[in-house]
Image 1 (cartoon, helix red, strand yellow):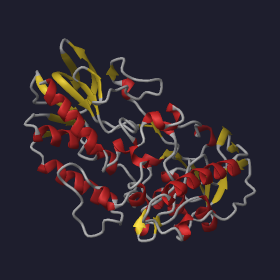
Image 2 (tube, rainbow, N blue to C red; image 1 turned 30 degrees about the horizontal axis):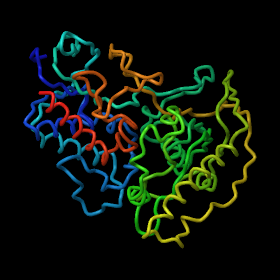
Image 3 (cartoon, rainbow, N blue to C red; image 1 turned 180 degrees about the vertical axis):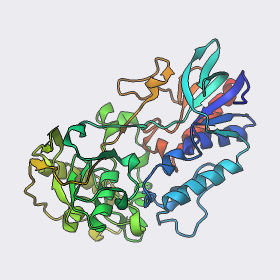
Length: 401
């Protein structure tokens, strides 16, 4: 590896956050080197084959490269998202070094020491942009069931799975999308459900995200949440697949997906579920009602839109135990957790593993974070929101110089 000790600014991660930070630094005539463990946009490349952007295309809006396509309210696929990021990286004067993993970060004198592919690199300033959700969360293991179990990051398409019914664990965006895809492919699907809000895909001619962006929704801060734990709450049930459409418990039930409660335990081939499906549906309905009330305050929202009406009553008689004999696979989609503390040797994280930063995204002198969920606001990790934090980081670094 050909690197130079005593670098000025090192950015770790070449996803949307790292590339946006490098762009904003370059705009202020500050050179930086971006270390990426795999390839530009790695987390997007690691999605299943049919993955589409959940937010509308106009949200591809990194600094200096707004969406320029002809379908702002549509939803592009995985490969097009990666292409957007690759073009963004190519347009930046910053040096992006792919295939170089940073495995440790610690203080060293007036700066920091990074271990990059086994070699030490010194930097005066470091910006960590690796994303806050990197480790799959598995509240229950399925090794004892003798059914192939894989995480959502390992799933690519229905043909990859052995024959037989599929148990999908987790009912956020990913769980619902995979349950729908598998069901449409002719597989019998059981979805283990938790608490997740839902949203209509569109109101009138506009995507729900377009409407929400006109409210304070994406500007809410961590202090606005009922508790820090709410930061780990499921994203709304929604999909951009096949042009984008409604996707939630009711649509999945109508499709033939069998809905059950949260997984409590596994033993041999049997899985026990909590008797909480109806409570989870009620939770999602309550959150959806809150968002509908927020949207009704917009002056240009079509108040007679069917999407703003209360949903039909939900009826189900869920089972609390299931025998997985004959099942083809279990797919866990129970969310992710931060992993910063496993490689960053600095006391800058809260009890949940998120970095503790000031209003300039700094966790310590010369150490910044960007692309973290709720770092400054709800949109901090999103394509159309991360640029604001990247600008803040770059401006702070410029002032300190």
